[in-house]
Amino acid sequence: MIETSLVVRTESPIGTISPRLYGHFAEHLGRCCYDGLWVGTGDIDLPRYGGFRKDVVDALKAMPVPLLRWPGGCYADHYHWRDGIGAPHERARRLGMSCGLQVEDENSLGTHEFIALCRLLGAEPYLAGNVGSGSPQELCDWVEYCNTAVHTSLQRERAANGSSEPFGVRLWGVGNENWGCGGSYDAETYAREYRRYATMLRHVDPKAELVACGHDDAWNEQFMDTNRRHMPLMDHFSIHRYWISGGKELDFDDDHYYGLLAEADATEDFVRRTADLIYAVLGSATHRVGIALDEWGVWHPEARSWGPDGAELHREPTTYEQAGTLRDALAAGVAFEGFHRQCGILSMANLAQIVNVLHAPVMTEGAAMWVTPTYYAFQLHVPHIGAQALPVEVLHGASVPGSANAVSGTASVQAGETAVTLINRHLDQPALVALQVAGSRQVIEAKILTAASPRDCNSAQEPDRVTLAALSVGEDGQGNWRVELPPHAMATIRFGSG
Image (cartoon, rainbow, N blue to C red; front, side):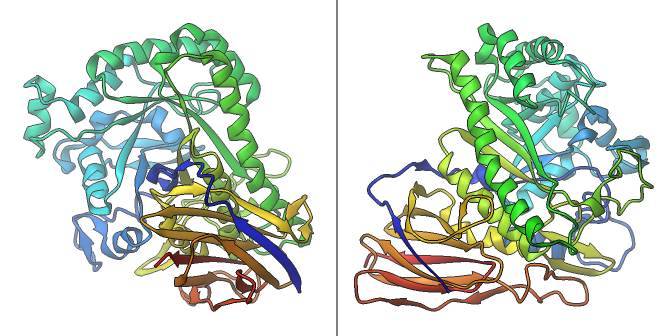
């Protein structure tokens, strides 16, 4: 058994953990939007809220979903928002193109339906605009259609389509991955294009928060250099991070297990490096730009549309689906630790994707619906949302491959309650943790997520194979809380001061 000692530095708050750090992403890709979230209003034997699956919406509300990005992804730079408004039976049927997958898109899930979904979920909407095949006027019109209260033609059209009140969408992405699927721009060309779009958008809605597209370090540096005199046109800078070196979804060895967790750890460094580039340009300027990690998560080989040699694989609607294991949930927990430490510079984070596709917390198959272990990783972190992040220091303990502590953690405080989330990353060794939390007098609640194997996952046949359980927390007689964690486990303990 590993023995380790951790202390929560309650005297050194880091900053507020924004609800936006627990955002999600829904793209018209595979079975995420259609068949996953939206099943339509026709004659089908599924309980629904409008055209949305009731069981899926109810599960997501309980997760919860503070922020939702739509419609892409790569799909965004093919999407023309007018195709998705008006009477559903009169909407254009287009060739839906995202990540090379070509399907018929009936556009029955459009702007009004998406806003309705956000209201059902209690989520803030984040709309990704079309740069690759669109125009500044098209995106300006979408912003006006959604947000204006002035009696323009677009406002009247929105009212005629059922929404007299503005939607109040604050977050607007100016393209997506424009270095690749969004138009194959070089950084300088996109930077100039962004500047053109953003200038026009500021006139339409000065309160809109605009998100520029980033990529790797070289691209980001060139973008900043090109736009160094125009930084106030940008509120957020988007970067994406997928973890792809962890072997197969179920058939992985020890090195792959630790490798995936190490990739999740490295996400924090990428966020930090990107912020350093931005701050080097901004200098002492009062305008701040947040890092928007608006796509992140595990992407296993089974869910890829390309082979090891880069060759294209056969594509089906289920191409981008993968089993969600306990290991994937632990990787999400590792990422959350970094999100909290960087909450002063990370303005949002969106898991890819919300249903069925990639690192999904919810899966469907016909009438069946189940949640993955990653769903429970989100639930374990609910007490941290809106709280003040606190440093967690490892005083002593073992390490695991990848130079990480075997037991790591994150903590926060709000309204007299301190929440601590711990992860035992060790593959096969339990851990005895001595935990110091100043001012804590009682355990309000303690829950744990673990399973017999990190390969364990839920399915339509076994929907509750991996789930949350109660955790026993004791005292060691020396002023510490005593916690025993099984291997490959994650737990959250809520402490009260009364």
